[in-house]
Length: 240
Image (tube, rainbow, N blue to C red):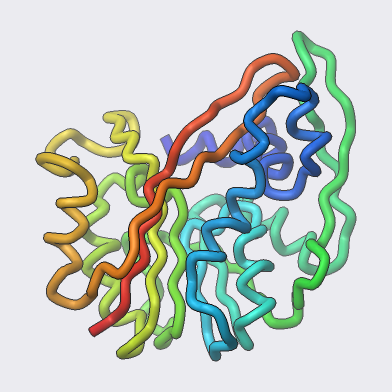
């Protein structure tokens, strides 16, 4: 199912999700505005202060990577989708990237995505990669961010098992997941046997301390009248 993230329709939806203004995403005055800016809010779960290196796994079209650049001297954004990485790189190079917003039927409007204010693109490098088989030469990081990734992996344990080697002692891990386990992405045998939080504690507990858990809603606009409203579980961990 990973090929769906190469489709222009999905790339356009994610560009709007990551870079669209509140007015561009949600035109209704009584809508769930607290669900906007999800790629910014997940990064805000890290401790305050400057760090050396940050890794954004499953970075999609890059908004969280650019947010991480505000407090990290070096950021690596990794995603399996070549189309997502191409879009993120073009934005990082300063391009105002045009995309289509679906209104209804065949009706579309054109919008553009650009660098978020205050981001430092010279600190960010994007690369195509597999979260279940990350490059051995990535090095060690002070922060690792993975939003809405774990429950989309065919074998999520392979990613979780790699995490201890990616973070220095005292480094922080922020995982966000809506816990929407689906067989089109993950075979049922690789799902948690119970609650996702309990499973994460079991899988990560030997190397990480869970220091905080919160709920963050997010909103993906499909058309002017149809949205995906979902609540992601965000956990922050510290490497022992």
